[in-house]
Image 1 (cartoon, rainbow over the protein chains, first blue to last red):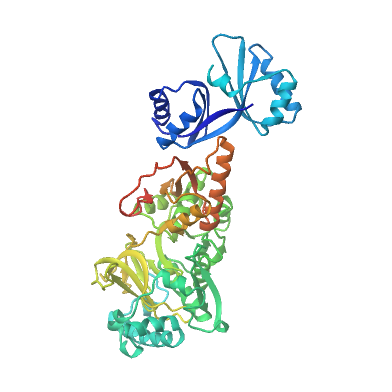
Image 2 (image 1 turned 45 degrees about the vertical axis):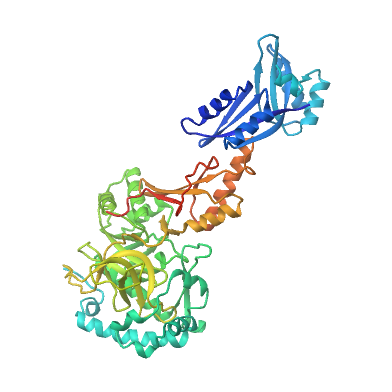
Length: 143
Length: 435
C-alpha cells in the first residue's frame, strides 16, 4: 500500500546538496521524484528512488542523516481538477496532509502524487473508494 | 574639582591604608576561622592558624576559595553570621549548579552602598543629581547596589530596573536624569533608541554614566559617550564580594580604584597560585576584610587583570585595576549574564542531544548574540520540518530557562562539528572585548 521515501538532512551550506546528489549518481541510483523542504539553517531532501533500501545503506555509510518514511503514491489524471478531487476526498475523510509533491512520467496521461498524511490506511481507503489508484512500491521503483 | 565621598579613605596614605588593612585582615581571619567550619578546614589542611596571619604580608599563606567551593558550600557553608543577623541575600545570574548566594548583614549592606556612593561621587554625583538606575533589580546586585549608593549620596533615585527602553527615555527627559547606571550594552541600546525617537543628546540632561557587569571596550565607551552626550565610567564588582563598587573609575577614566579599606586585591599566577608583583598580568584575587556575613578570603575571580599604584590625577591613592583582560576559566559573560559552556552541555544531554556543539558569541549593534550549533541525532531527525522545529524550540526554551538569556539554536548535520584530539573547541567568541 505504501512506498518508501528517503529523507535526508541537508545543511544550508554550499556544496552540501551537491555532495548528496553526487553520491547517488556515483552509485547509479535513479530518482523517481523529489522535493525539498527548506528552513533558514537546513533542508530536508525527500526522495523516491528505484532502490530505497540500498540507497539508505549508501547514505548511512557516507554518514548522512537519513530516515525512511512510508508515504502514499496516488495516481491522478494529469488534467485540470485532477489534484483537486483527490484533496477533496482527503478533506472529506478528515485526513491532514503533512506535505506532498507530484511527478509525471514520460509515457502516460497520468500524474502521481506522493502524499505524507497522518493515517496512511484511512487515507488509502478513502482514495480507493473514490476511484483513485494507489501505487505499490515495485510499481513506483520500477517505473 | 575632584569630589570624594570619603576623602579620608580614598586619599589615605599607602602606609595608613596598609595599617588599616593589616588590622582588619587579622580580625577577619579570626572571625572566619571561628565561624566558618568550611574555611577552617581549608586552613587546617594547609597548616595555617589565625595566629600565623599577623599582617597583609602573611596573606599569601591563606588558602584560596574558588567558585567550586561556593558551589560545594551552597547555601550556608560559607556563612559567618547567624541568619538572625542577616538582612539580605543577592545571587548570581541564576545559573544551575553554579549559583552563588551571598548574605549581607545590615552593616554589609551599608558598606556596599558606601562603595557605590564613592563611585557615584567619583563621576561628579551629588545630592543635586537625578540618578537613573537601569540595572536589573532583584537577585542581581546591579540594581540594588547602585540604588543604595544613589540614596546615600542623596541623588533623586529613579529605580527603573532594566528594559522598557522608551519609558526609560521618557523618564530620563521628563525628570531630567543626570546620571545613568546600567550595563554598557544597555547604555548603547538606550543611545540608539534616543536617536530612533528623534531625540539628540541635547534633549537629555545626562552628564555621566556608570556602566559595568560585563566587558566593554574603549571604542564602546566613545560610542556611548557620543550617543548620550556623557562621560562614561566603568565599575567593577561581583556578587561573591558584595556587588558593583568593589572598584570604580574616576575622572581619569583610566582604570578602576579598588575600595582597599574593604577589599585586598592580589594578582596571582592562575596556574601556580603564586602571588605576582605589582604591574604583572594575572588572576585577580579578592579578600573581603570588612564583610560580616559572607566574608570570602582569597577568592579567585578568574578575571585576568593588572594592578597599578601609579599616582592618579584624581588624587585618590587607592590601587587601580585595569579592565579585566580575559578569564582564566571558560566562563563567558553574555548580556551581563555569567554563562559556562558546561551548563549548555548539560541541557543538550538532558534533551537527548549528543555533546557535540559549538557556541558562537558575537556582538551585533552592541548587543551580545549567542548562537549554539548542535549536531542532530538520528532520534531527532524526522522527515517533517515541523517535528524538527518543535525539538529546536524545546531546546531554546530549556537553555533560556537555565541561562536566562535567549539563544539561537542551529541544528547541524552529525559529525559536522570539528572533533579535536585534545581539548575540544566549544566556544568561539567573536566579540572584540579587549582593546
